[in-house]
Length: 97
Image 1: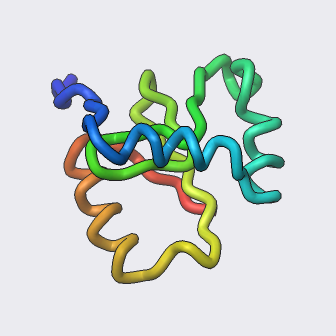
Image 2: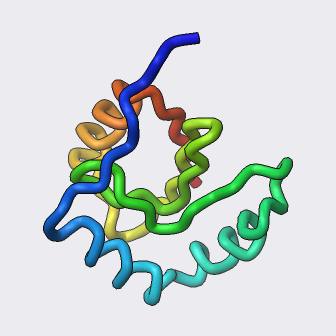
């Protein structure tokens, strides 16, 4: 098993941004969260709007190093490409809906 660097929360803007985003879930995020919370999916613990270094991901299961992203108007191909590459280099698997 390959060791991956720990997930770090950057001081500064990332954590406050994540907190704000948790209060403003989109309809799609709210529906997905209602199915992921409380370990409803195979007993996996998910966090919503979780900071990972300079990024905030929609849903994160640290145990499985799994990220679920709900693509919407705020996502662009160019910014998602760099973000995805960095997250995958950290050992995460990303599922986009």
